[in-house]
Length: 398
Picture 1 (cartoon, rainbow, N blue to C red):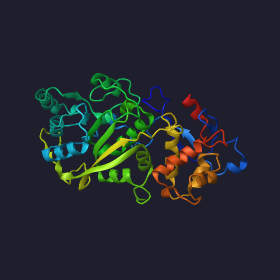
Picture 2 (picture 1 turned 120 degrees about the vertical axis):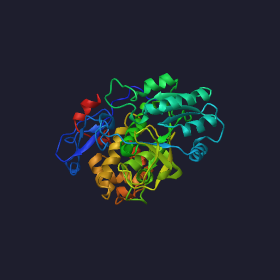
Picture 3 (picture 1 turned 90 degrees about the horizontal axis):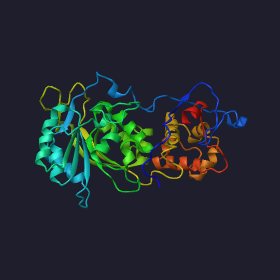
């Protein structure tokens, strides 16, 4: 059983290089290219570790830039807040249910949560709203805690000293009295908010790494996310073979890890923005920082109890990530060709084991099929080494 993970090996990220290279053996079961029979050496890709853990981020970390501010967007409709309460509250009454609300702003949803009996921690990154939230705390029997914190910038990589609103989750959760629970236990807390539009993709990838490695917020158990996302990211997150234009590695990894549900669709015009001029304003469709959109999608992402197995763990998840991303590098190629580059095992035999035709393409594989493929290779008894990697990876993993 996998519980909260501590002391895990550093995240390892791999990239496919065009140049030839040598392969070496890792304790995790990889092998040298030179040790492979000549007939297996064709078409092998070479891999090299990168110093940054989040290779999927489209640009440098957003907290490092001073020029990327965007107006905050907030829930200011009481009717919308009451709708969301009905969606995120569990059916059975739980007086101890804890919510972390990201950037609550004027506190409309905060008040509705408190009136419904929940305990709330308001993580607000804009000091302008702190006094109002503190006054709300006094009026609600102190069941509200207010912290000057930006949840979406929590646990920045290679950050030894964090200053508010940037926080390290270990310190924040310790101050809040939140304790880690087993992965198999229930949902320890729920997080509610609106993903910052310009950083959506970056945040989703970072959360994925945290989830699979059981670090950051996921060190404390199966934390549930309830977030408004753009239509584009909703389509990406929920896509499958029947939606090939949106289907990608991000789709597979999130669906393998979580039960992703659409709870509500709300018109973009329902949200107010705070453009740093001291006044909340209705969000205009032609706001210069935003594309023209019609709706935001409120989704629930609940980590699966069955995510981790003997073959897929918080220690070797990076190999699973690499396998999926490699396959989607050429999404219309035959899966058997990808497997020849990824592993010395008999690719056709592996496909027969998971009941897939040798002509199956990446784009035809469902998320569950990728996990099944990875676990089947991990269980292969005919090969001591299951995966191929660059010799430099050994040094970074030790």
